[in-house]
Amino acid sequence: MAKPPAEVRFPGDRNRRKKVRVRGIKQASKEIQRRLEANLDGLLDDPESFVPEITGELGKVSFFGHKDKMAMTLKEIEIVATKRNDHRWLKKRMVKKGGDEVCRALAGSLLAAGEEDLSTVSVFKHPLYGTSSYLRRGNGKQSHLAGIQNFNHPRLRLLVWDGHAKAGQYFFSWDGGFVCSCSTPDAPSDWISWVLDKSSVELSGEGVRWTSGLTEEVVENDEFTESGWLLLTFQDNTKVGISPASLAKTEVPFAQSLAISMMPPNKLGSICEAGWMWRPKGWPEEMALPDEGIERLGEVLDSWLRMSLDDARLSESCRSSILNSIEEGYVVGTSWFGEDDREGFLDCLSGTEDEKSAISVILDSLSKGIHVRSDGVVLDLDSDVVRMEESSCHPNLVSLWPKYGKTVLQGLFGLDDEASIEILERQSRRKQGFGAFLRELTESLDTEMRLKRLPWENEELPPPLRMADSLVRKAVGDGVSSTVSLARKGKGLDSSMGWAWLVVHNRTESDAWRFDETIRDKGGDWVPALQALWDAAEDLLLNDIEEAGEDYTNAMKWLAESSGVSEFH
Image (cartoon, helix red, strand yellow):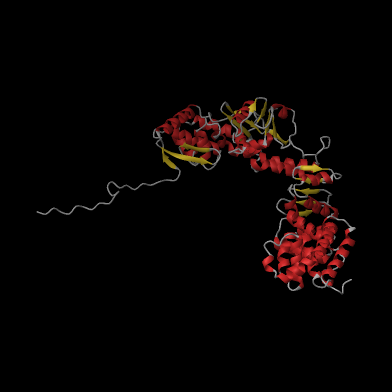
């Protein structure tokens, strides 16, 4: 008898069960269950174990008009505590819409404390306060339930009191205690010491604390440094100095690492004062910083204390608040120069002498101050300060050139409008660096001015004297090597003049085959006169010997006579 075909099964068919996942719910490990059980037992024994010590002055409990929120909550907690074993009452209280919200979460937590099955828990997640397991019972806020059931956690328990913090009350929590100073921000010294030890920067010292890059003496004496540093002075006179390098390396923002252990966390500035210990390089010690700069600096530090400004940006923002408030003299980078020290200002800029001269010409043309930002924006100021955020000439000239390029060309080189516009258009097309551009322009214009010393324009001369003049001009402007190609291209008498030029400069060895014997013979007869012409040209145009002008004229006349040019004067 044939066997029936084997049953076809697919992976996962056997004992397949549908799993339903509820968001925020998980199976608790044995360790989590033991911890929660211990916490809930402690809460059941003492329902006020999550309540901070009151170190401030509570207001009166009143059901009409003004009332103290903390006093009202404490009063209702006493009522809930007396009902901690009354499950029926707790079930009603934990879903009640009215009444104190903290007590609603407390009722749910006390009900959970009476249960035996702790295997299924809810998960509370917060970007700052982390993750924690708790039992969700009733309509209490998740953060309140998690904080009450983890009342021995120094940071989570703060979340229970977020509403009270919004109402103007202050809470401080650390491993050794938990206090509410009511409406007066009064941080315990133990809390200050603990949060500094737990902060995101490594601190040395005790009464005076400091990071790497600083010393105890610098912080204790409030000394300014070249790069600046952050000074925090707490209510108990603890002084903390933090260097910019230490702030730049924090994984957790430093202010956040302190404020996370208090409530409200955005009021760190109520328990400490912040200062930035810096003045611009060159600023006289006896001269106060501008009031506007001090005010802006205070706004920057306040923003940092409220965790609205990154640690890495604090140093730059503090310096900018001061630098951008200066209304006299010269500011470059983080240095300041008095209005009578333009030379020092220009020397502080990195760049060529031509670039510095160009900036000096621009400064001469200003009637008021100017601010050249690092992003290329140029601002005209009502004050007389010249402020350049970049300490290199090139980026400043890039920003200033569209408006002041013609001014520079006319001021440095004496060019007219037409010549200036032509050069500006050429520079715009080439996009050449200003150092090379100004150097080449200087050399080009210098050569042009030198060539004006020659007694004849090139077009005024007859062949082959015109060829000789062209060779002289090109050699002065571009060097003798650049003339070899021109010497080869001559025709007729110009070819003989080209050969004579190659002989004068000892360039005939590889070019003799280009010239026939007749041309070489004729050009050879002109060599003495052409040599005299070049010698005079070197003295007149390259060595700046003005008396050589007459020698040049005589040498050209000799060359005219040698080459058979009869009509020449």
